[in-house]
Image (tube, rainbow, N blue to C red; front, side, top):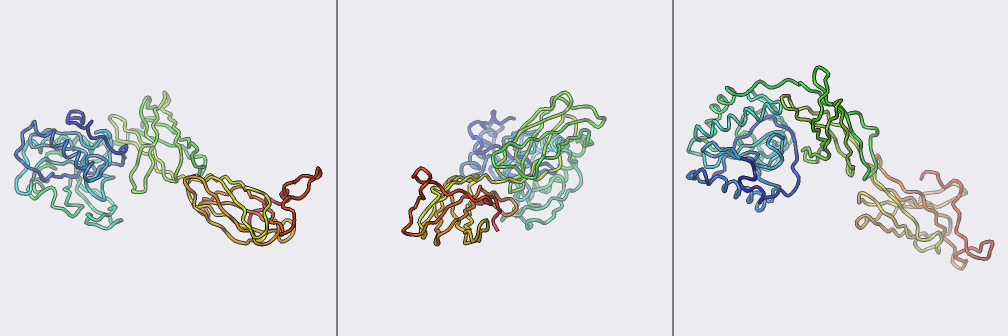
Length: 418
């Protein structure tokens, strides 16, 4: 039963869905009343979705699917029932699982045969769709969390069909339903198709650089072919980026052409990993190996003036993207073409603009070099030259026409800061 039929359009997700992979299914119960009619179920799902989003502050309904005791199956979290949508249903394992909630409290009451059959059919479709078998065990690395039974980084072995309590500190899905999981596994295995072999191969060409400037487009592309070498045309390819939590979010979409080739552009504003993903009907989901790409900050700066009185400050203004502290390296010329470090002035920008006051204590020519970012991925603006003039002397020297002239940059002005 799609979202629009239970009122999902009234509970818009806070953000676009994130995608991971599906290696197992977690079974839950909602710990709510069991005496409901079939026509009540849609309203129960809607109320639960509103509670998860508005009270818990989650992005959307936590479960990927919801099943009632009559065997009705409801679409849960938005993003596509055929997609590996990351829910909020099994802390520490959401990126690698799908979650199925049973309406009711099954601590002391067993779930109905109709509901078990509905779950079996759902899991027998969902897991093989993502290349996972319905039988046996799988090892998932815990991402931790205050509700998790295992510390972050711990390898945990699960049945392909597990109860919520197997991974987190909870009684869910209730003792009675948990005792029915072996029967659910049996029913699922009896109807599940064999997992498709890797019948397609998805490639992503190597990136042209290890890092790109902030805001620039990253061009990615590759090909999607069958095991016999034939092209897969007209297939959607998702370009995904990994977030800090480890989940994958779609950042661009492409479609393969007649030769199976695909291309996409991603506006790059933070370092991370990219991968491509394609779900081809009748074949296992194809995913490329992640590729890391760095981000180079963009920094521009200018000095308000080229001459100041010694003992006063030169003002350096500019912009930096992304917003990050800017360090101005201050150097004073000790002999023609050679500068000696005097100090560093650090300033925090407001939004993307910054203004740094640099005190020039002694007379002489100073080189001011704004930088930002880590040493490995730093950005450096062009060096600025400002002369500090002794008190009592003209601030601007007389030019050939009697006017003022700016201090020229020395020929060695391009020397890197020492």
